[in-house]
Image (cartoon, rainbow, N blue to C red):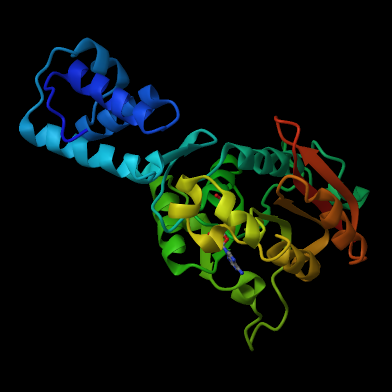
Length: 313
Ligand SMILES: C[S@@+](CC[C@H](N)C(=O)[O-])C[C@H]1O[C@@H](n2cnc3c(N)ncnc32)[C@H](O)[C@@H]1O
């Protein structure tokens, strides 16, 4: 496709669909529609009701540039700058991982813990129950926050939660802060830059570490050697530090298991996302730590073991 020679909305849409389909982009119709909606700032229905409208040269040029970006395998979400997660929209740039639907399982599980749907804690803890919440004002740590999708969603869903969110990437934290501001929860999330728990290291005047009710994380967990086999959209555009979990994919997970008990209250909950096939090795890491009980694995809607949950002894 040299350039978009067609000029009505429908002709251009059809030529983009033909072009993207011809170079092997999956679901070219949806891609073309999303690019057109983004470029023309219109709703999907307008693409079909205004199909006879002639686009200006400027509009056509702009759409063409977006189509070229998609043809180079840049993810649609980086082109449009947004991704839906839970019921919210998040700003995304190549500084952050694009939030995935399977990560919503972590949100579901965290909400179950907070609302007391899960048998956690002793009878003494259960005295904390007020209204529908087992933890009415939970203090939550989101390690590896990226776009902030987990921290922001939990802050929106749990009105009295206070959340700490950390990441090793300063540029990711900037996006996370923008997302927190966009969703009105910036005042309840403390964003801290640093390598996992180092971000929380006790300061000289407050020697005790902060104790959280819940630690949640979607860490990088892909084996280094598997990265080259990922889709071009992922390996070519998403940040490597968001993907690479080291030789067996467990580098960051191991550190989270090793140290979380120091930062959790007694009976507090650690939960994090894992990759397909990692559950057995993750269970072994928990077993050798002796700091947790009630370790369980939750499958996602595709039947893949996706979330690990454990309680601090
Ligand atoms: C898989 S992404 C998850 C992002 C987001 N929580 C989500 O679910 O979409 C992992 C994130 O961990 C961050 N990260 C990687 N290593 C880290 C470390 N040692 N300490 C803190 N953050 C780290 C990356 O910068 C990236 O933002």
